[in-house]
Structure formats: C-alpha cells, structure tokens
Image 1: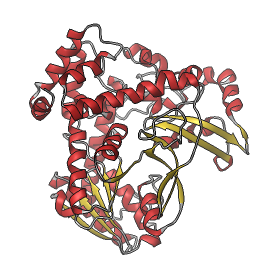
Image 2: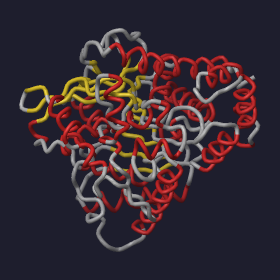
Image 3: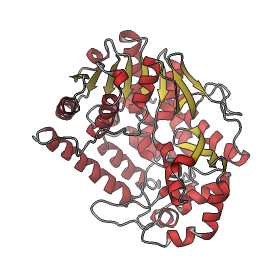
Image 4: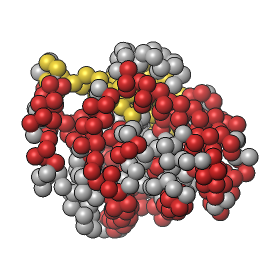
Length: 457
C-alpha cells in the first residue's frame, strides 16, 4: 500500500492517467490516492471521475480530496507535484508585453510556458513552500516533480531542502516517432537518452542490436524532403490543429546536424537554435505550416484544446454512462506510478528520470540534475553511467543551458532584480541593457507579480 498525494489534481486528464496506472497495479491494491487543488470545481470533477472509475474497474483504491494542501500531506508516502500557478492567462499577458519590448513569443526558454512567469518566480516559490510542508508533515516522502520548470525546480529542491526529489517527464517517448518514420519494429529498437529535462539527446540508437543512426541518415538523404512536402507532414490549421511532426521536422534534423545527436521530444522545441524562432516565418521554415506547437497559431490552438478537455471532463463527471470508452484501462505511458511501485514494493525498474548527476554524464557537476536512465527500487534511485556527449553539444547547448538554470536560481535565492536583467542579457534578442531592464521592470509591475516585485529588489 502507498499513500500517493497529487498536488494540482484539477488537471483531470493528468489525474486520470495516474488513476488508470495505479488501478492497473495489483501490488498497489488498497493504496490511497489523495487529490489536492485550490480550484474546488476542478477538484470535485477530478474526485468524481476518480471514484466512478475506481468502481468501474473494481479497484480497491481509496481516494480523498482536499483544497488544503497541508492536510493532504499528512501521512503521504509519495507527493506528485503538477501545479501551474496562476494558469495560463497571466503568462499570455506577459508574453504579449515581452513582444512589445522586442522579444517575440516571450522570454525564458524557447518555450516560455516552461518557466511559468518572469524568472520562474511563482513556480519556484510554490515548490519551496511545498518542500517545507513536506519536511514538516511527511519528511520521508518522495517528491515526484512533474510541474515545470522541472530542471530549475528540482535542482532547487535537491540543493536547498531535505526532501527526496526526482523530476519526471514523458518527452523521451518521442523516440518512438523516429522509429515509426523509419518503419522500424519498436520491439526491436533500443535507445539510451541523456541530457537535461527538455534538453535530452539520443545518445545510443540501435535496431536489432546494430547502430541505427545510419538508417536515420539514409532517411534524411533520401526521404526527408518528400516527407516535408507531403500532406502527412503539413499542419492543418483549424479549430483543433493537427500539429506538424516536430520530432522529424527540418528543425530537429538541423539540430542533429549541428550537435551530433538527435534531439528528442520537447528538446526540439526548447533547445533548438535561437534562429529557428525569430518570427513566424522562421518557425514555419523549420517546423512546418503554422510554425509548430509554440507559434502564435499552434499555442492558441493548444490553449483552446485544453479548455475543451476540461469541459469534457466536467461533462463526463456528471454523466451516467461508462467512463471506460474514454479512459480504457491500459497504461498511460507516464512513469509516476512506476516510480511508486518500484520504491514501495522493491520492484526494480529502469526509468528515464531526472536526478543529481554524480558522474552519470561526464563533464557536468555532480549536483546538477540530469535526465538519464535510472534504476529505481527500494534502495532509491541510481543513475546509469552514460559517458560523454559530443563536444559541440556540450559547449553550445548543454553548458549554456546549465548556466541559464544557475542564473535563474541565483536570482531567486538572492532576490536580485539585477540578476534577472543579466539573465535576460544573454537572450540573443537583447540589444541593450536598457531594453532588458525595461522589460523586467514592466513584468514585475504587473498586478499578479506583486510578490515577485517585492522579492526581486
């Protein structure tokens, strides 16, 4: 049995993924899933779906729901954090303001939603409060950190608190799209990926035991151009955008050419060269019609789709029909419950997780979190040594990304507004100190950033 507490349970789609996974684990029978959200309506939706689904699949899972986080943390064995403080409305306003200062589509990572606001303040402050609560109320619990920014957030927790924390993402599964495009049998494919969260690379790629990179090179030479010109690749811009294939886009192949390894999943969006993202025209060149997931076209569609999913969850929670057609009892592909099962029941598993490096990736500090294959079990988490990465990749992507994280955390820990300005000075779109300072001051003057404005002096 395990007491699993989900913070941010109002995201019903994610809650249902975890619910399906825990119900499919006989070794976790009679466990408790505790749902937490400050939005009472969303929490009630998630709770109703959880109770009905457990009943339908005849699970002995117990469930509880709280708006008070501290009450929910009492007795927790595992805490899953999936919180996006403030939702997406303020982020979109900040993105528009940044555009007025010369920063197309906002500041931060290439994908600015990962940071959740200027300097990641609101997310980092929440992670800090959560960790302090855990130190007091469930000091032996594991924190499974899935809320962005996973890289900055989990680094902060492991360095500045006593909480046992691990970062989790599902972006690594995008390697399957490479295999599918190359017409490879997934059952005969083996991979090893390494890097930072949202900055992971295909370190080893094999098919039937042999290096499969030559197969990718053949596809690039012989088939890529025809694919990019085909209807299969073209994004259809309508009410629900069918996004182009970022994983096999010209942008992904260009990053492979420059760095020596193929970027995987969200890496294509967040660690690709800055010149892919200067404007919509550039995005369309590298990521297809519509500019890919993070353009003004793609992102607007994504937000509409999120609203539609939430509305659908609400309707399902009050319906009288079966939930199984919408949520079939099959594994979701997420790793959160796999971690719980491995640690709670000593069922050793090899997972793709974010933990302190400790020489897993050569050339990176031991205390920096890396996303690598990890052995999970009752003894905890142990990273598998993956060796070195190509010099171009280390010098031009990995080390700059690590330093970006260090700047954000240093500014947060010291409360330095100047630190935020200097962080923004490293953005290639910055033309002057005054431009960067003007944007930081404008962002921190927004009403929802009042506490951030007091923090960064």
